[in-house]
Length: 176
Ligand code: GNR
Ligand code: NI
Image (cartoon, rainbow, N blue to C red; front, side, top):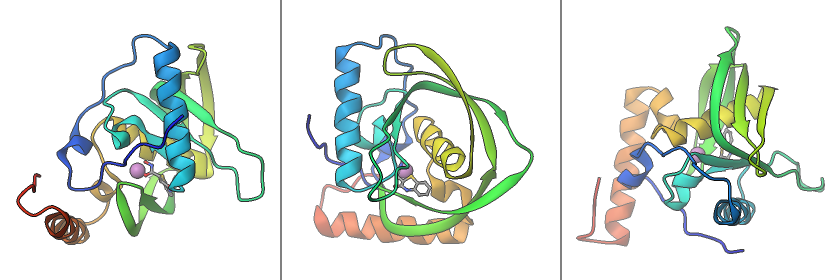
């Protein structure tokens, strides 16, 4: 197992559309384990493969609170089948946009079809934080970030700040 470096805004890698996983094999399970380790280290409650530079439709989530036993979930090729008309608002953050938080409105509940880490087809009906987190992660698989759901004014401010930070860190190597 290993902790992988996180891809940070404004890296254009985050805008890639991830490719479906064709085989749930040892290589994929190793990537899922590395993603879980990277997520726990951060710490975060979810992580999409593209956030560690792997454009594959794979994400991990663990919503267990501090002091509770870990509850890792692996979702491969997830697809939203149904979204509720009812909406809910959560303050979201993203490991690829460190230390920035904003309220995002999304469907309050979703029905999601996916393959588990054994390659078995599963369906879940999620609500609350699980519904929000699944939608946030599935957005990543499509190159979408939570700042795409806030006002353009706020988004432009955040992108500008992260471009400046990236420039300070690696002058002359700026992309995006
Ligand atoms: O750690 C995370 N917390 C979080 C809080 C509210 C809504 C979504 C999230 S996901 C985020 C980790 C992350 O960036 N996943 O892509
Ligand atoms: Ni994120």
